[in-house]
Length: 76
Image (tube, rainbow, N blue to C red; front, side, top):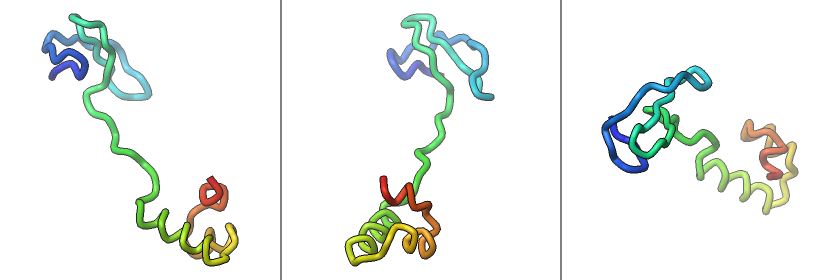
């Protein structure tokens, strides 16, 4: 395992955070976890379709019913 900041391999365990093992680089002091989750959210295709529906006159709640995306998410 390497430090994402400096690339050093001198790493120590540094407790747990939200159920994941936390590590610390002895060289630079950077704290990190070994594996990050991928970005969560809706795909670009779903976002594009929701925007297209809104531009074509559909309301936020109608988009929610058709796409299954919450209306406040569509608003933002």
